[in-house]
Image (cartoon, rainbow, N blue to C red; front, top):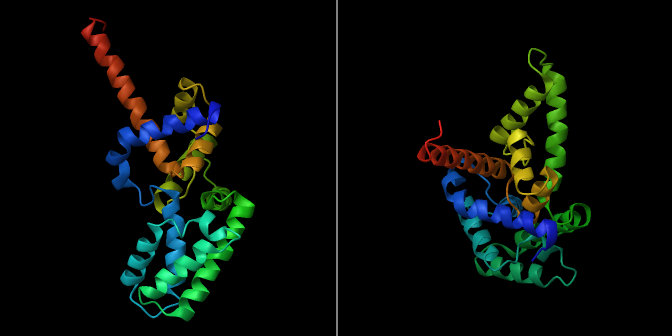
Length: 226
């Protein structure tokens, strides 16, 4: 368990997810960044074996419940998780040749993610999303509104249309962070540690601030303050 500043940031996000996650979950395809990784494993397998996608997805889900397909597990030098995942996939009926190729490929990707991005696929996706955002801003040449506003709008758009793991880093995120004795960077680091989608974190923060404002307004009215 993380301690100090990072531990506090993780605790804050865990509380938000517990309090409001269910309410917002339907609005996000990816709640956990681990699910994005499993989608890559599924994609590699489904293109390497001759089985319906629904069947392959079910096999991946079953193996994943044993934590054999996580980035850290597949990147492990001992190869134990990889061997067990292959065995389970073959026992489920997937072809040995296809399983061998697909899961070896997944292990290669996992080792690269472990080495280059501290085991966090979202850091790779975020870096590429930030490049995409910069290219889109340059291509669209939006000048009729403030550049900061257009940047926030385009980031929000990429969150929605590409499920990009980007944070708006807007005034609400900054205010919430400051209220908790943190900075926006602490929130992003904690979200990565917990594998929480940053777009979801933005929405959790926005909802929490709204509820806090409503509570303050309600208390003021109860005390006769107008």
